[in-house]
Length: 317
Ligand code: C5P
Image (cartoon, rainbow, N blue to C red; front, side, top):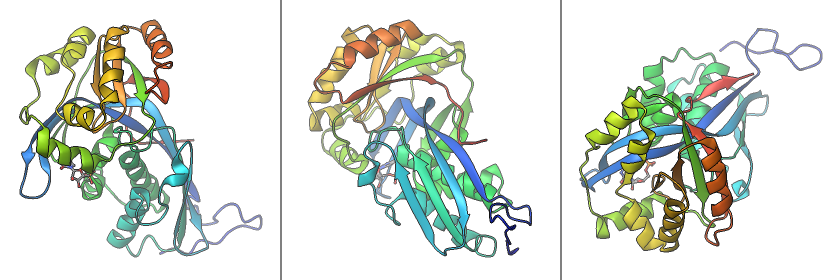
């Protein structure tokens, strides 16, 4: 690799290589999540509609003279997350290093500024991994095509590839096979965060015990509604096979979903494996009213508003 030498102030690499890269990555909601029975590979085949929203995390990667990968996380609850190989963001950087050993030498500092809820069912960890892949590919000037990044992302987790592309996409297989979907208009979401996170694995295991599978298949009505921009029809067709098992594990989520649905939302659904509940509102004003109502709910830790669809992982200045 090219050795980077620094100018007298030690700020800028003389070779013209980037010294740091910042990217923004979105959270996701599944407008539909239809889960097949457990497969022999230990995963469930899915048919899902991913929808990226404007709730984002920021990731900064920097070259370092100190060897190794260091991760620092900022944001509510992030102090409880692992900062070693147990964190998908570190695994993403490590995966690039093992795939491109000659181009990725030297130390790396990763900083993640979190707004996406932790263990919230909104793919926060997955989107951080996607962001690290993109940011490090730029930092190390790797000649990665979108397909290369997609393949690497698939190896890290089921939700990682979608975070690279954002927008709306139909996901099949484990969720990693993606077909982008055109949509019209902007959706206004109210996101009710729970006091405690839920483990994706636990929810899938409970689905294996008590869940009812609808497929894997996404309803034609939902796909038509997305294409035509009919928000009310989208709201009527929000569906998640993991919702009933998650509510069985955490009955209070049923109360939150009921409160949102009766509190003015066009529709509501558990986001991914939960526990975040996502409510679609008719307008920005309706979303503000609903957010105010839900913020008083005893089983809601905090409420955030977001719009979608939002772009996938992208560099910021
Ligand atoms: O792919 P990822 O590591 O995010 O998945 C976490 C866990 O969720 C898996 O180990 C598996 O137990 C479960 N899962 C599944 N079927 C999927 C996606 C995830 O069973 N399609």
